[in-house]
Image 1 (cartoon, rainbow, N blue to C red):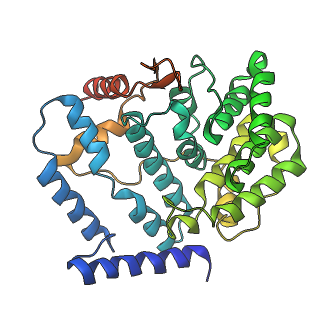
Image 2: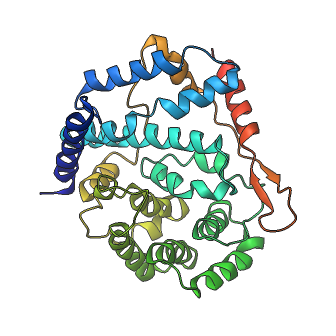
Length: 325
């Protein structure tokens, strides 16, 4: 059984467990159940708002059933175009939700969601969630270290090159998880144009992906979209180097998806599901221009210096939606 079929099997088992326990199927087994679920959420929670910003936040936060159901649809139809579009919609929604949700971190905490977005060739998000003008992170967590390296690569920040590598080397000298180690090492391999190391890191990441705990579920582990995205990121940095990298051999890395990408010239994903007229505000959120992430200074002089400005992000997104209503 390949991992697409494994996903379908696990998905239906989860739906059946929910029915036995609660009397309804979730995640939804078909389009009718999917739309019914969204309709119930809309009618119960999305009809009355104190402010327009709250309206935006609640739509993004609650109408999230495209996630597991979208992958289920792609896999049971064996359709890589659907998969590409599901990745686009799911990652856009996750990124927008994260941009409006306080986390006690700076912008680097969205790195892995961004990596999943790269899997559908949505590189536009880099300029919005990792804008060039934002300072480099201190490098405490792997996402911060890797984000610094991503920005050095993407923006060709020669003046910040040495500092980012020094922080990465220092991070790698610590006791860290295998996943953390090879994410950072992979971005270093792109900087160094070390194809052997890039190959090794991608293979090790597939193995580490299967050992990750919460929030990764058994469903998530069937398809490592983040690893597809990190692999694909190399293409926009140096296509000649990308062509030398070997795709990892692992069940969670879908070779057929990469062959489809190559055959179709790496298309950017688009909307998988268009919401019905009464929920059109959600469609407009996806159509609106992406806000640009900004940071605010920490109130305490100790510890982290910057945090995501989630209030500004939510306000900007709401204004962008209003422009197209």
